[in-house]
Image (cartoon, rainbow over all chains, first blue to last red; front, side):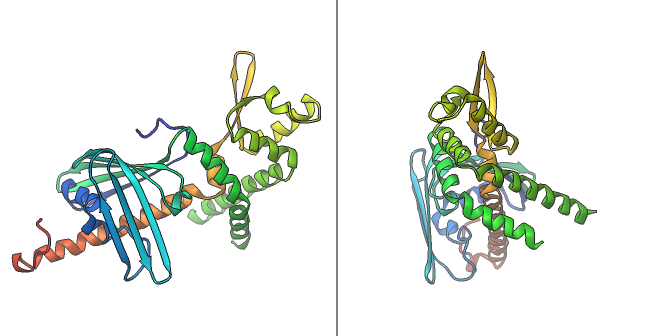
Length: 150
Length: 131
């Protein structure tokens, strides 16, 4: 699926010291998802639910003091333990629908993980434009002030 | 060496932001971007709503192209313009934020794997997960 869209793509690679099945479970079992997916440091009230089949939904609700964050999406492809594709909507994407692909390639006792996060083509990218336009001056101001303080 | 490279990268980024900033400083050019964010269009279609010559609009389009905000491709005799999503996303930081987000999440995932490994080594009695 990666590479077909025209929008920007972020790719992150890791070699992990665990088998592909174990890593796949970390991504798809709610009791394990809550133990690492929260971006908040320290103790966090994190709830996860998922319906692990194509078209099934997942959601994560994370609360830390006054802050809360919600991420959700739909599974597009579930191929344990090699590949997981799901849509992703949350604050990081300004609540625009995006697509995440996690590929797991066994390398002996270890696993090569390749995560690809891309904007969905067509309508989602148009929404992205609008969003980019809405926030662009704020972020520009931040970016420029950072550059000048270096 | 790494420091020089980092400075070069920062200078390049600042130059790019300057170009984007000055490109967006003009209301006609902002209107062009807004038009194209609804979908790609021919140069003549983009020029249509403006009360100025095609030549004057073309100059604005050139400024936007030079800043990296617009892409142009030829289709027969037509020049088709579109917004470069990558440049907008770079400018507003989506790419950098997304990369940082997943790097942090994967760090946390590896810490959890280590914890689970330790739990497993405590023996079957203390075992919480069936690996």
